[in-house]
Length: 359
Image (cartoon, rainbow, N blue to C red; front, side, top):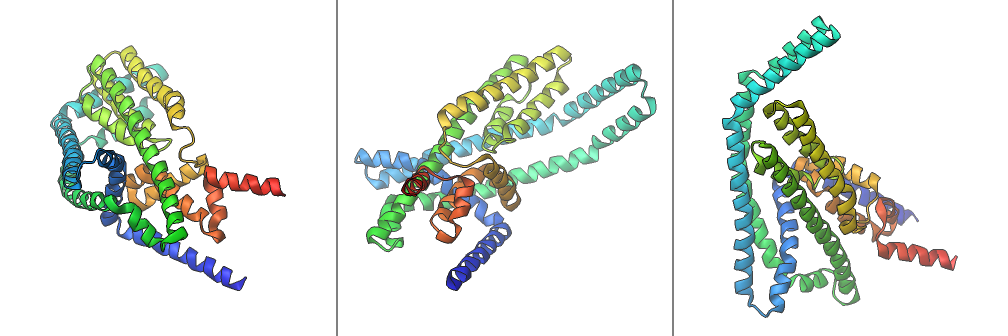
């Protein structure tokens, strides 16, 4: 009993140490994690090409150049969109200030709130001074530069993971000690792989669907930078619960800045809200089902936890990372109850049902 207690305490301290290390080394581990998930996402393509009896020296360069080429092209398109937004910053600030002035005058006249509203307007206008905009622009340009540096590191990690995936089954059996233990570890890896790939693939599909819809809506209303807003929706769709809502705020704000018709703004925002609601609450659950087996509380906790550890990257990867954590906990007897609290898999639920029947 005492040995089990010491073992449990040691595991808890090990988990805390791992969390601290992950937070401290976030700059190195974030592109590593993204590269791993990207390699896992493209692993089914490698397996399919292997079934066609293509040699590995053809498969690896083909998948590498195709995937990295697409990612780099997307990065260039988004970078150009960001630079276009920066070039139009004076237009954006002037129109936003004009809108605030008009709304402030209407509120003052309607509700007779002279002093309070004018103080509010003064505070709001101070936000849009040129020095703040210049500082913000410099931050974006610095971020674009770091993006290309991170992309190089990501590419190196990604290629290494792709090479490693060719012999993954043999390696995992070896790590497990061979025999039944190795086969059991391989089985658990397959469960993690299936869950993670299913989640990332389905979220990507839903994000593309939302992005295309937002792009069409923006084009229909003449909203500037439609490609950027569509991509933003696609990326933030990976953040559970709040991602799509946050992503919809930016094109809505652009519509407010750009459009003069109040009804046009209302219809534009309504179309974005309806699109997000329909896809998120009707289309996505049909395809997603219960692939990830995480309850709502776990998803929210994971969003906060991984957001604290790795920022935006952690929020995007929070669900697949917590699925991995849950499966690991389920196979540590002293911590299995935590895995069940997070949301049990079908296999674990079957074991519980069988135990209940025996009782």
